[in-house]
Image (cartoon, rainbow, N blue to C red; front, side, top):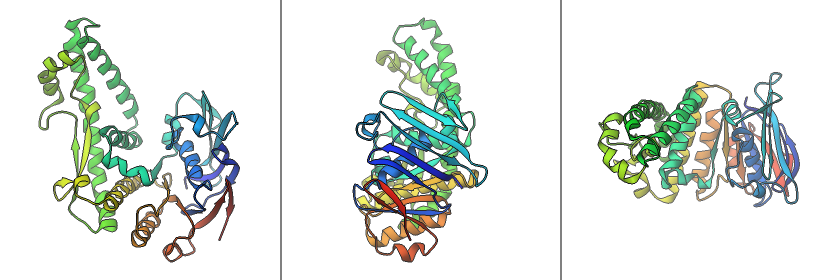
Length: 359
């Protein structure tokens, strides 16, 4: 089980709330503006050390309060680890096992949460950096040294760019290019391997939600296909000197979702694209659960958004079938919910920032 207990203070309209979630499906009912999404935001804060709704802490902290706190217990009953995040208007403190952490990395590794919400469709419609972030978050959880590898690449990239801008001796370009090729190749290979592992889970989720078998994932390393990164750096050197920065590399990496060989975003309807995005995120959660059973938490906000009742029920049924600890929000009593979840879910009602257990 992932989250054993949750305590929230001063997160948006939630002044103070506590809940003990179930180990499977947790349903959060309430009117728009009641605080359901704020509750999910609090869980996300406890997982990532940041909000998915705003990078500005002042917009997350309850009006006129100096800070917010989210704390909880992660793990198995009787063996939970205390975790907490205190976010002020200009500072942040993360604690794991009673000790302060320098970064959120330990928290992220301990309590991986995958978020699905209406804006998730931007993962396929938006810029490549969002898809890179998804890949890097996933690889981080399966490769212990990946964060250090990203940092090494970033530092080396800065050094090579300094040479290209004339801020460092030009004679060192070959050395920095060699180092960059080394780290960049490793990153691209790990991303590609991770995407390979997602494919099977993704295909199953796509078929369950869309009934299609012609969807594929295609990786783009950030340089010309079929070339080594070292060769790509050598070929781009004149262009890089003119631009003053390194053009090819994993900092430009991406992946594409194709339907029948065509880009999904150019082919599918808005509702279908949303389901495709949800399938991708569910596949990521499923892969992580396979590697780290019992630790993954799934957050699903506003399941009814832009989906008809049939697709809502399909999605809810699929979320339930994963067996993951999940938190799903609804505005009002959605038709078909009871038939899909039966008596297996734990129900919470959210009203004006207050949370009570329902039936």
